[in-house]
Length: 139
Image (cartoon, rainbow, N blue to C red; front, side, top):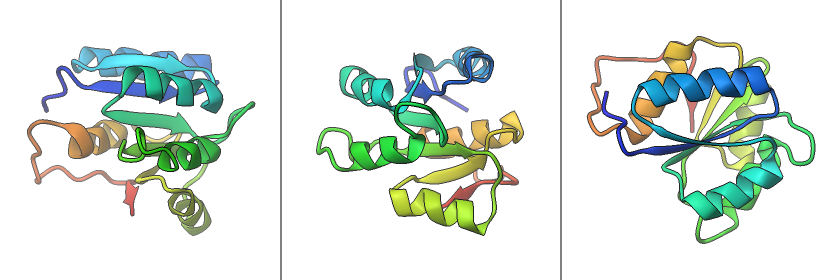
């Protein structure tokens, strides 16, 4: 897994969760930028031009769903891959993520391995097809 030099924007209002993810991604070589809500996430996406956005679906001020819609409607940010973290993954959650334009839908409380493998599959320099995430749902 080669994530050195890749910038990941983490958008989450859950400080403990956001900090845990940021530390883990930093350990893997990512540059990590954080935002507390979707509105700040949009600003950060413009300022930082991240390789990937990982966002919680439910946040105050602007939800992750609305964040994806705003990113997709802007020519500067429309191609940035987005992983939405949802409370529970079921058919309705997957459909909602995709209908708003997210690339991936993962459970917020899911394993870190699935998130890391999805990030590697999306922006990693060396994709290794023998790895498969257990709970990743992609469009």
